[in-house]
Amino acid sequence: MANDKLIHGVSIKNLKLIPDERGRLMEIFRADDKEFAKFGQVYVTTAYPGVVKAWHSHKIQDDNMTVLHGMAKIVLYDDRDDSPTRGIINEFFVGEHNHILLHIPKHVWHGFKCVSDCEAMIINTVTECYDYSNPDEYRKPAHGSDIPYDWSRKDG
Image 1: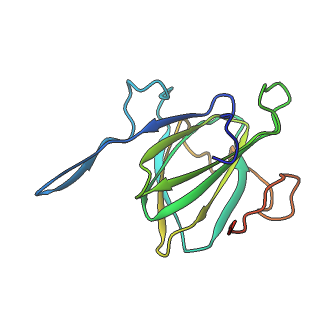
Image 2: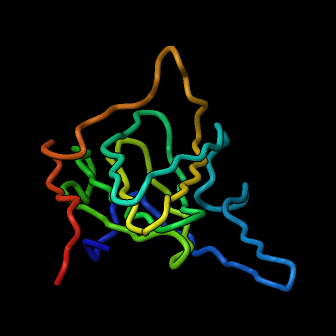
């Protein structure tokens, strides 16, 4: 994580992968999880190696993301005026090597970058259905916006 302090309202659920001779099973999100508020819809999005999909936030919906295939760096930025963690950035490496569900509350800017050598497949369970006529989607450019984050790889 880019900052030891977790953004207010963000939570992480460790996912348990159960393998046997037939394959694998992994529960991702349950109605009795503390992160669950309500069901809107589930969707899958992907990114090819090195591709950044950022920045966006929502005024109504919460996101619950995990990576099913490949690895992604999911980055969050808190610019909420009333938040005790205003100005904090969190970085999470999620996927085949780190099975977690990431709960992202409304008003927190977020995006992701595929950091594996294969396509990253992200599943997102959100609290609202997508409204095609009035989307709850607010965007900023991935590079050069007022969010103080550099998506380049940090070697060293």
